[in-house]
Image (cartoon, rainbow, N blue to C red; front, side, top):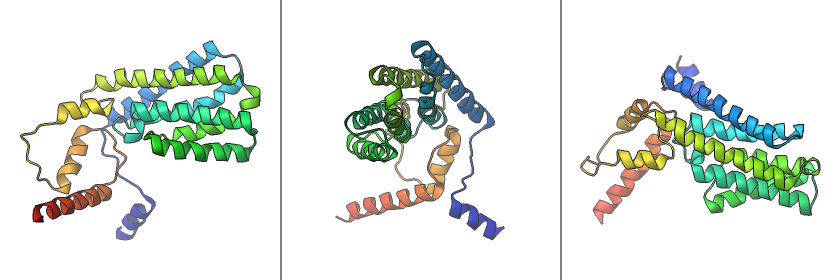
Length: 228
């Protein structure tokens, strides 16, 4: 059992502590969101090639509904990250070509720009790739417009659906506003962090070991400050 546990830790298997209700909400909300954007696209565009950019929109929907408190799921990374990806993809295809190499360059440039603009959003990689490779078959201006409308719809749905449940808040700013209590003591243990995550009943993309390392590093910084 110890060997199996070590193997699971090595490959990154984490125990999902969320309730069955939370898992059901994540799945149904994601399904609903991507169904809405699919209808929006079908009404707006006739070319079947646009079905391909649902892959990226579905990935964004997955993040904002399954990981609503995640840093990569927030409105700015979701919208700005996707917008940058689409524009970079179109720009590279327009001034270079629509080869796989150009698509790879567009994805790399997208990641680079996302870092500097503080809007890392993984589905943007698929978006940049799509707009480069499919550029010859689409109306770029129309496609980018409809795609970004889809992303806005996903964000707006996330703001409505996620906030229907008291343990979910989207954007995360609303959770911070309700959670801050200056009278609470600032001394706590790693187990307390884990307990809070379980109480929130929202899957958080961070392991307990990572929480522990962050906590220990923060404690060391606090200790160093007290010595000065």
